[in-house]
Picture: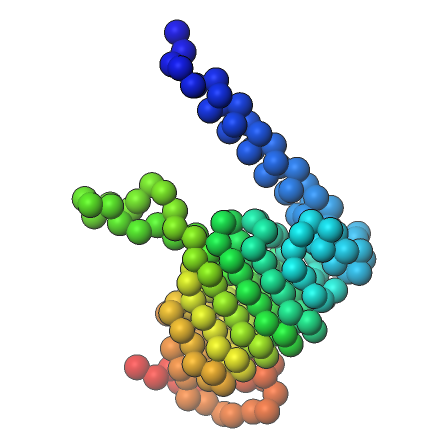
Length: 195
């Protein structure tokens, strides 16, 4: 015997799963395909209700949720993962995201017993204008990367990174190293991490 409301919950879950699957096919498999030219990919993102203001989104980019804004002249390299979910991801203008960058919004707090909560919290994760993120950088939920910051490959960003700084490590910390007017060169410097 089924409990009252079980069928209704099952149908609701099925509808949600189908909507997620359709969105995945449209945004990730079709628009994200290397066979789709960038201007067409941009048009599909816009048609899906995403606030994407650049055609420089390369193949393999995965986008979940709707609360996404990508500014003009921003470059999103291959295989980035923008986990908007029910949160918000704001990426400014003139940014560069290296291959495999992950930007996350979902996190789990602790329940009364100190265990990870079963229900996720969704935060806004913000990357301001002129930010450079090296390959495989992970930006955690609620983080803010201020204008002009450069983050070295493989770093994990949490909290707030100050404007114009160069950061590396897990978690990302300021580095001392050669200064450069060229953000890509600065992103690859092997400077010393400050404690």
